[in-house]
Image (cartoon, rainbow, N blue to C red; front, side):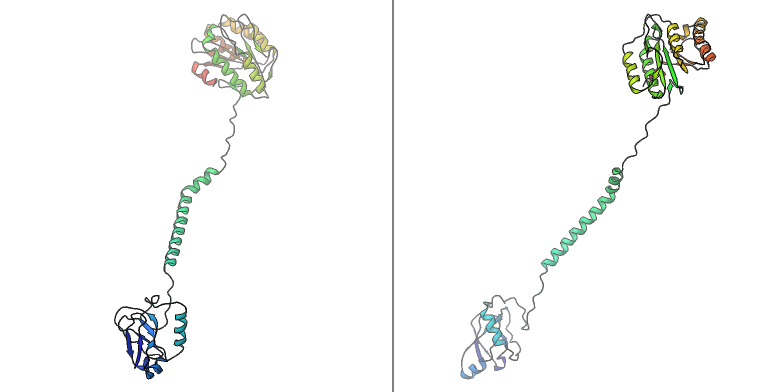
Amino acid sequence: MITLTCTQCHATLEMDEAFAGGACRCQHCGTIQTVRSHLKRKAMSGGTANTKTLHVQPGRAEPAPPAPSSGLDELADIVASSGLTSRRLRHAPSSVPEASVAPPKKSLVVSLLICGVIVFLLTALGVWYVMHGTNASSSAKPQATAAPVVREPTFCGVDLDVPSVVYVLDRGDSTRELFGHLKEACYRSLESLGSDRKFQVVFWNNGSDEAYPSRGTTYATKDNVQACEKLFDEVSAFGQTDVTSAMTRAVASDPAVIVLATGKGWQLDDSFAKTVLDIRKNKPIKIHTFALGDGGTNSALRDIATKTGGEFHVISPADLRAAGQ
């Protein structure tokens, strides 16, 4: 028989000599420990053996099957010298065969979690791009610049596509209420002419003569149009007016078209028409006549336009305001 002392509970254990060089389990505390091969010799001489603990496990003690001596004595000495105690081996597997350390599961869980977060972020980014990316890219595209609106040369809707135009505008009492709108309509018409056409603006005489330019016509450049506006900014409508001097100056400028506008067209008679036609004489100048307001027959203005190849129009206050915008 072999006698040894349990390294954990220090109980005295007795076993058959066949366990020498193998391992056994303490029947009291369940600790697995090695049985050195030389204990067989000590048993013969009656000595008590010391063992090395391999595992401590509560429960019943079952002797491990004897194993042939294969250097376990030296392994037990190495384990003992390394500082490993039976306490560190308590939770080793209950079977004696060599223990294997399973890879930690925590790192696998963390890796799966990181992968899941990455997949979620990529999915969210893809959804955001689908919903907003198209709009963002389309909004980033340069917008096509709208072509500038080219205004046709006109006055209150009448075509003025001619080399030169002279505006002969009434500034008497009958035109006073619409005079501001008449000037604005004239300025917009000048802007529509473009810099390759010429113009002159002449007001009917009411005791003084105003014209731009004072003699002849000038190109409708931006600077010239602004100079005209500045000169006539303080000009107002009042008193009795006469068209003779204004028409004489206009015909002398030899334009292709004369624009004749007044607020007293319904008051004018055949003598007015004769005066205008006599000043024009036989020159091929078209005269477009405009009756501001909507009263009267305006027969004199209609007759002038008909005999010179021009157009006659009645312009309401609303239409005149619209032409000046």
